[in-house]
Each structure stands twice: as structure tokens, then as C-alpha cells.
Amino acid sequence: MSKNNNLSVLLKGILKENPVFVLILGTCPTLATTTNVAGAFGMGIAALAVLVCSNILISLLRKIIPDSVRIPCYIVVIAGFVTIVTMIVQAFFPALYDMLGVYLPLITVNCIILGRAEMFAGKNSVGKSALDGIGMGLGFTLALVAMSTIREVLGAASFAGTPIPFLEPYKIEFLVKAPGGMLVYGCLIALVYVITSGKAPLKKSFSCAGCPNAGNCHTACTETPAAEGEKGEA
Image (cartoon, rainbow, N blue to C red; front, side, top):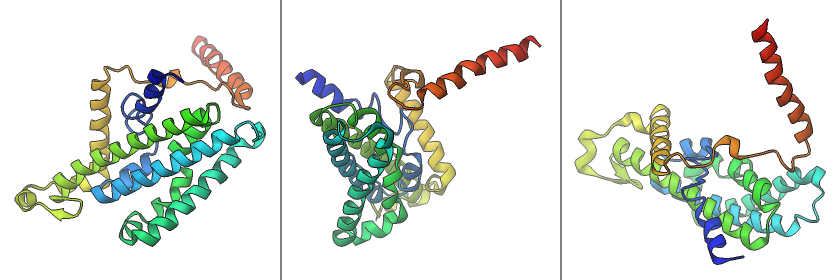
């Protein structure tokens, strides 16, 4: 691997292919854990650890795992690392464990983790997969911290649970509620779109190559436009 290629794999998850603001993955934990900076940072680090470890192991086993059962195998690998991370957090960071609640074990079904296993780790070397996990994990963590900073500082007049007295009279409590989270989320997505000049990957950039069900999906996709055209002519 060239140094430039390595750097590209590492950095793409931070902005160009940020899993939260560009690929729009992991929306549930993003909205649920960003009312407090400490909780958001903890969730990001936990997801980063699972991403890196699962990417490495899946890349090592990619030639052994049968294609027909690769998704269940990926889920088992991810669930194993999530269990380890959950036990570590519960043992050494009980306050964070209580703060994250059910969202910590739910990392198992986080679309970011499974998506990188399917789209990258299952097709690339261990080194590249580790870098991809680090990059995507950092991107996820930075996205959570950015959202939680805005929501907690402006909505609760505090930072990581520490009160900010001079902001107390001006806090916008709407921002720490679900609708406020969606508003902040949408604004940050728009900001990233402007920063990247709209050059971030679009849905059409992704394909179904390698998927065992691609043939069936292709048939459905090719028949739909024709059917719609016939209805229009009718």
C-alpha cells in the first residue's frame, strides 16, 4: 500500500465519507446520545474500538467465511467485540454505562459497523481494514461530539455535565429534545455538504456488486421503470 492510499483510506471517514453526515448511518444512536458531550464521546470511542477490532478479524477471515453465510458471521464477530467493550465500560466506567444504557449493546446492529464489514473489511487487506475502521470510527466520534456540543451548550447551558452559568438565562431547551436533535442534525449535514462542495459520495456511487441477491434486485429495478412508463402512456 502506498502512503497516499493509506492516508486516503484513513481520512475519508472524517469528512468526505463521514458515516453520520454523508452516508447517513447510525442515526438512532446519533440522536439519542448527543444530549451530553461525555456520553457522545463515550459512544464514539466504544464504536471506534468495535469497528477497528471487527474490521481486522473479518478481513483475516474473509477468505474462510462462505459467501452464503457471511452476514450472520459478521454479526457474530461484531456482537463478540460489543460484548467485550460493554463489559469493560460497565466495570471501569459505570457512570458512562448507565448514561448510554441500551445503546451500548445496540452497537451490534449499528449500520456503520456492519456496513464497513460488508463493503470494506470483507474485500480488503487487514492493514487497509484497520485504517478504515479508525477513520470511520473517528468520523463517527467527531460527528457525535459536534452535535452534542451544540445541543448541550445551547440547550442545557452545560458542557459534559459542567454548568455554564452565564448561558443559563439563554438556553434553548428545545435543542436537547428529539425535534431539536433533528434540527441540529439537518443543519450539520447541510454544512458538510457546503464544505465538500457537494462532492461527497451520492447513493448512485454505491453498487450491489458482490451481493448474492444482486440478480433478483436487478430484475426488480429494471422492471419498475418500464412498468411506470407503461402506466404513464396509458
